[in-house]
Length: 332
Image 1 (cartoon, rainbow, N blue to C red):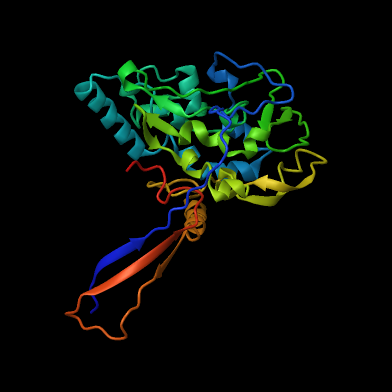
Image 2: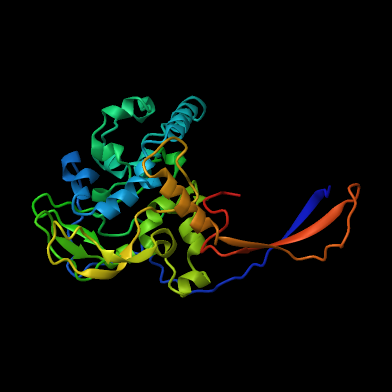
């Protein structure tokens, strides 16, 4: 039996120097920018079930994603309750909407959960469908400008610090997206927004500092790398492109065949831990993504023979193929 007692990781650090225009917000202006909406009601947003009829593929992919699982995960509820108690009893600080602001943007914007400390997995069933759907269609496709990095300052007692820039239109039901020549449907109008093709779209929830310390800095990890220079965005890996129809042609006549559609399964590293819709497809998408995330190879010479009592030192080289740190979202 070979005993592998020591592994040495060789890492190569490459510093990429890029120009900084000083605009941390990374706002991308629309040709005819809509107003920045200041207040919201739950009825400003539709349930994903409304989108299902015309967009069955997008709906099916999303419904098996961690975005749809964001406010259905019992592990998240347990940790949320634990942290609420910890901050109240040990830090004399109200955690408030800190976790909810990204796990259910609609709940955050509408203050639908006024007492987050009392939120439980069981009580969440009483919330509206728009809230329970977590990161859902009508919240994502209402985004008009990029959220800047979320900077939490506990000394000021401000933990729910994210800035959302949404615009909902309950008359024309305008939805924003990455298609340059969208077609109108009988239910909603569509407008092109280049932000939906950019990594900046993801920054608000995936670039987080707490008291000046990077807590989850995936956007900054990617920014300035060769991947950014080559045009690899978050959407490139986590919303894989494909060709097809954006809508069900049975309901939207004359819809064009497109070569620039994107998957809505948002594959990453997280996976549902309880029975969930589309869990097999989710697991397969995660496996396919992670199978290309790194290459691992023995970089030292290995003797032809070893004995069970020998100590074998092996040097292992890991090549990171991801566009960010591996692992990402972890503070060291």
